[in-house]
Length: 80
View (tube, rainbow, N blue to C red):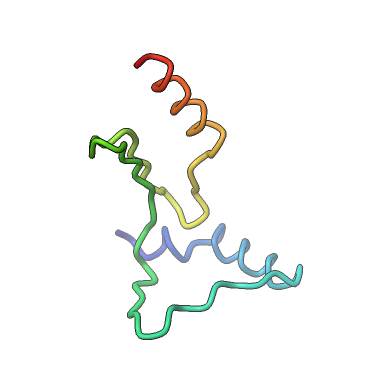
């Protein structure tokens, strides 16, 4: 993965704006080695162990859309 995807202009702009707005950053966990170029994502697994959703972030600010996830879960629940 190119480091530019992690530390690109959009990412740096986000962090600079957050800093100037007085935003707080998460502190690293004590005793945990962090990988700053690792991209994030989310996986939803149902109670039977079946994977229902896989979301892979395309940038550090790319987060799963919670209202969409709730709608997906409602649709899956109503079809069962």
